[in-house]
Amino acid sequence: MKTSIENLALLGGTPAFPEYLHVGRPNIGDRAVLMERINDMLDKRWLTNNGPYVQEFERKIAEYVDVKHCIAVCNATIGLEIAIRALDLKDEVIIPSFTFIATAHALQWQEITPIFGDINSATHNLDPKAVEKMISPSTSGIIGVHVWGRPCEIEALKEIADRHHLKVMFDAAHAFGNSHHGQMIGNFGELEVYSFHATKFLNSFEGGAIVTNNDDLAQKIRNMINFGFAGYDQVAYLGVNGKMTEICAAMGLTSLESIDSIIAANRQNYLAYKQELSGVPGISVAEYDETEKCNYQYMILEIDEKISGINRDLLVKILHAENVLARRYFYPGCHKMEPYRSLYPNAGLKLSNTEKLTQKVLSLPTGTSINEGAIYRICQVIQFSILNHKTIKEQINIS
Ligand SMILES: *Cc1c(COP(=O)(O)O)cnc(C)c1O
Picture 1: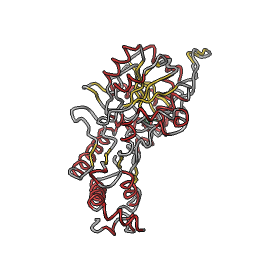
Picture 2: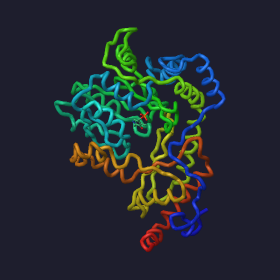
Picture 3: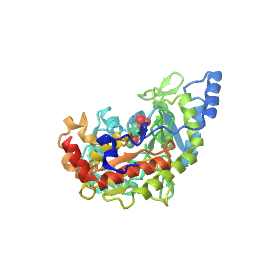
Picture 4: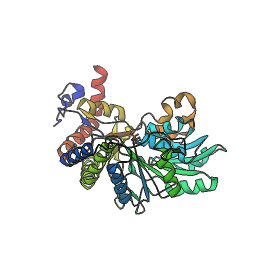
């Protein structure tokens, strides 16, 4: 309990937590079941190359989101690259800058120029009006990202794409298990790509999946993830090795069996944070639509310094000192990281909402490794810091 300013770890007090609390700490399913699967695959000596666990994982993911085809891949970044190539995207593709760097890299790696469109400050997602402004004769497609799992403006992006003869796909790395107007994410655009990286709420150690309702596209992608092989000695496409391994699929299947309890824990954490932080000046919690399915995997705050008296970066420092490793997603924005910063030095001029948001957003620990007691103490540090912001800033300047 922080009762006086000297108690803050930043000012020499004891950290509120003896061990680090991480954002994205992996959720672990039933260990015994996982070990059984691992022993079984070792007995069978079938470790990769579309084995029975990968097939079962693909079937269960497709069932869960009610999509026709699921192709499991080694990670979402390679999944995005394969998807981009399978759709024949080229020259310029519009994406948000407010996303994980992999969305941009997947394009640039193939010498396709990512054109950064600004976001809507309220939703944190790509603003269709900004997208329309970025279209040029070289634009071939749009990649929408469902940031924090909140669906981006799917219909508006589709309408723009149709008018300009562009293809639309989605980076759904955050959005497995979420719905939009009652339909599961995974069914929109030409295809969508999930991530099952260890830090995502549902994990397969490393992994991802491309989902689509298009039969031809699914077959093409299936060949592409396996060097382009279409038959024993027949290569039909420029391919790569994008296959998911059996051990990853076993982890994915085991995680999937716990998905209800993981989501329930995330939701409980979200509600607890929301309750503890309601009414704290200058803090707003990013809301989820309770009428839709939602995985609640990100606990996101916006700090308004004018009201809180404390800026996001100082709050991060205070929390880190308490061993709460809050994160500044997606700071500083893709356009401010290399190689984009050097290649497109003026991109920021059209990204004013993105630049403002990257100064305000904070991600807090959630998932099955944290409990309500910890959440209460984290919120108390935040509340206490805002209440005492003047004294804290004075003390830091003195020391
Ligand atoms: C995690 C993430 C990725 C990359 O996923 P990997 O499976 O780690 O390659 C891509 N896009 C977004 C938005 C992500 O959050």
